[in-house]
Image (tube, rainbow, N blue to C red; front, side):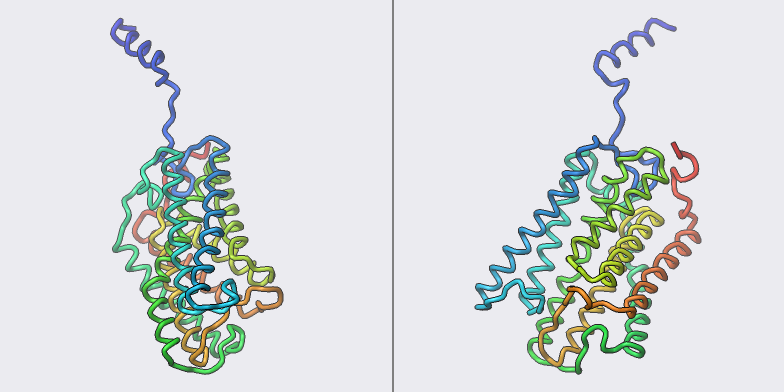
Length: 318
């Protein structure tokens, strides 16, 4: 070996650079592209979750003081309660991404999409497709199980108008916050516990989906199962498309449209999201089918675009 080459290697070894491995691995698929110490995922999962509960309770208590309510934590959604919940979720979603970026020492943009850049056009296209699918789902529920979501009669009052304003302005923030927390932060950190690509993706999907379902606080098996399906579907969407644009688009379309219909069909009053035992039923299978249809839509679109074959899925199984 030439003397100069030996000196370079000696210098690298002396500086401790030879065995350094990057935290961001762009040759691996999105969702399994972050390398971390084993304990760091625990912090990324626990800290934002605790922060969400604390911030949400504090915001609700503040709203209770403003409204003069004796039950600020009630599941009945007033415009201010809806606003406070949306903002608290949005804030903690950003916190989760920034925490992961800091702990893993990776660019925060790599947690939105990797190895490609975040694509706004992709988001708009998927938002349109998601809106169509969710519309079909809502239409089917209206035909076969209109009583299941708790709809009463159509009404339009000042309360309805306020709910619609909050829905259109702040529900996208809430939806994006959930995707940032569970798909951008929790999924890749949980996946980092396992090295082989496919098991890593499976672990990341399972942990993030269960965490998503648990954090929705439902004790009803139908609702818990539905939230798990939502989490698993949006995780699959993110893996297939190599980013969270489609996941955010679907989440925004679903939450905005469902909240809009809930507001309009509450008889001009506030509506309640009751997630206690025996509040869910088989009609949730319709909405679950919408989630599965969105996964299929994303798969077909990405396959047509020639990017469904993820880096790492075939070439880096170890």
